[in-house]
Image (spheres, rainbow, N blue to C red):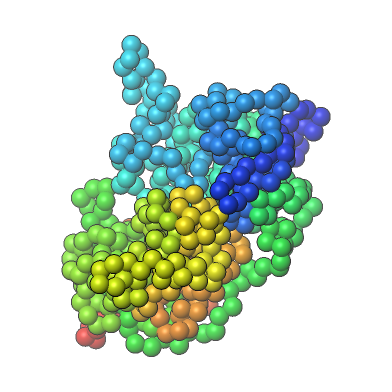
Length: 526
């Protein structure tokens, strides 16, 4: 906590008074007041679609409110765009990254603030400063890598460094830990505490109640676009916060019976996949099996080959060597549509790049992999009424909140509701194997509870589930078996009932490893 440095007799560093913002079909912010003290870490909590990101986007100049005013240090200010926000010392790490994918990491960090002489950018000077910041804050990056080639975790670090490079004193972190490992989260929390001690004021948006309880001084809660209340963290509990957020009690553990594994659904034999960043192998001779009726989790620190492994399974990337068998059939060289129509469902790690067509409507996204089925087309003509009915059913069953229902453009929805839309689409398809990569990324506690229930229900219905997660609690609570991937290899197989988070962490960091034994379809020991 940082209460000792917070001055309550000074003007607020930032005060947002009676902010109202309306989008077509929805009031995103309804008369909300938020007060941030100097040197304070102030958490903003709410369900997916509660209006948190909208409120912060108004503060950063991305949106203009219909009503209300913003004061900085007690003086009214007008923030027309992000340039105005930066001029006022306001920086933001966005939940959905604002990066130019074809630029390098370094170019993204310095974009718009490049040091130059007579129009020539002093790149060497900029690189030196960025690398000093990177080292100082423990945010390791490859400055020359293209953003389109790096992991989601690396993109997050790029966003944080972009803000630190601009020396802002009001720092907005919108779900900054959503894709970080436990070690990286701990480091980031230390960074944020250090920034607050330096006098910077932090607005911290998170769905993770443990993080808020550990890090924040105060917390403001929103629900369905309305202000619920502001509490001192030292005087509240995680359970009270969750009830303020969702309006009911929430279970923090996963209820599931013991697994009853049946036949093998997925068999991976000696699979190797090249890295997206260089010519080396990102996945090295990996063999594993997933059976019907079990949840197998691949745990590991981001960047150890998990993304490339999933891409090879789903057909997004070609395997260098090895075989992938689905229900005994070799699908290694089959295309993506074949895999989807023969039993694959895939919740992707990056919902924007691989999960949705952002400028399509919600109903169009719901049938991306099914529009050619007889139910949705007749003699080559799309049956739009059937698609509308189907989408409305999924929206209702999976509680996907959107301003205009099935005709809402996907880009305009909150990140959590985009994720729920993908989940609805993938779970509703007739699948034998569900590959879920970071399925609860950016979701609130109520939505996480729902997603976990759906994944367990999929397992109990006799489907195989391959879960890829960086969340240690999720790994321990949800899996029936844990496989640890380190530097592209399976280094251990653990039983969540008998292992500990500490032991799991040692395997993830490469400090421990074991020889995993897996049987192939032919009974060969690998």
